[in-house]
Length: 235
Image 1 (cartoon, rainbow, N blue to C red):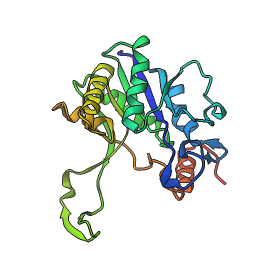
Image 2: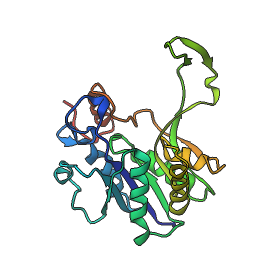
Image 3: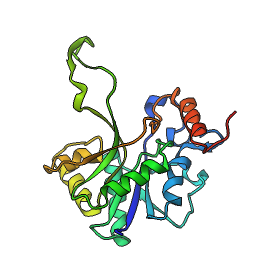
Image 4: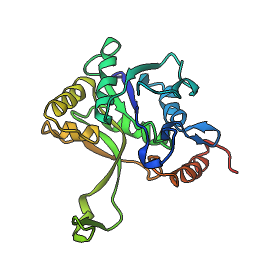
């Protein structure tokens, strides 16, 4: 099987949380959010190693459960997520080959299911482009005008929520992100960089409980999801 690696951009400061502690380092049922995010990749036999991009002023990483784990590589964080991902990818070539798979996952997304990770790996194993986890949009979607009034209602038939992991070949993703940044485009996810090359990533349906911690109310919801998955005990 083609070797697989993981990348976790973890240099964000979590401005929307309104917390002095970055969201990936918040307490979640007695463990740090990032520990849950790392756990599945650390334990998965297909994942050769994980490159974690950390901010220069990070004072919390050493408190994590996997700070000194042999599968973990450190990379410098950047001003935006796309910079951090590219920095982490640039650490991998001394360990990986250009056609190895890389799975980029949000450090503040602690509820990824092992079954969804396995489905992504299996579905994309022979895919010529790669792809990402997501779920079809179920709510009615509105486009707003500058005054926050409804400008139009979108057809949700072909709309998806984009999740992580997002899985692409190391060489392809490095090229895609490098070209996007050179053009001054700050892509918000890795699939967008691939799309700029004229390629179409595959969407793989996962579960809606793979939420990203962005607001304070997400923490109790994440705890509930982890309890339902059996990853922590119920209160």
